[in-house]
Image (cartoon, rainbow, N blue to C red):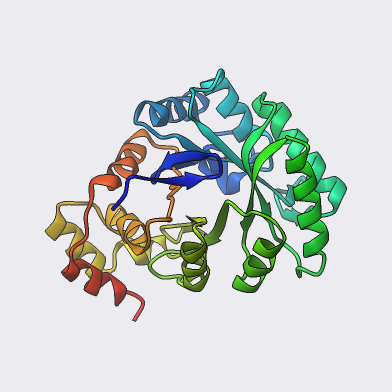
Length: 283
């Protein structure tokens, strides 16, 4: 298992950090403990994390402000990856924001909040029927060509949309949901593998599906964890890393102990018996 993979212009460690959980419940509002959130970000970098995933609409505004406060000026080699395509209303609901002016405003909001002139990658997060996908791609291409972002990523896309997009421009990563219980994006992962594109699974422990407990208490996961001297979370994350060399993890947490547990998954190695058991988990 390789320890790094290209992400746009950079090569990053395969275990990064997703900052969404640093905001309040549902990624809305301030953190329960601001000092603890700042400590998690600083500890992530100390542990060698060089890929942090964020979005201006986490909070909104909260998470990017935390990242800037904790880490600016940013360490050399740190890849900051954000996304556009959504906004939050006053109740915390997620609303699509995919018109060209909204995408452009989203990029500028991220740049301003993080205090950078260019972002390493910005993901186009699809939240509509995809009818305006070409227009959205054109906007992202223009933003990249203006030098505001180094690479374009896609999030929540079908394999057909991915294939269409790479015929139009370079795509450096894809973020789709994938975990032991939710495997619908496996064909997208395989297409990314063939194309040499980083695949970044979100909700790697099934949290957004309300299935984290079912995943982590599955007898096969628990037995494998005990046999390998790992935790169930580490086994679930290791299964993702083991799928393909282009998988980059961004597990999120607001806990220092969970952060250290997640980063340590890079040392967990699955054997054939583990693969056989874990591949059968959804059955």
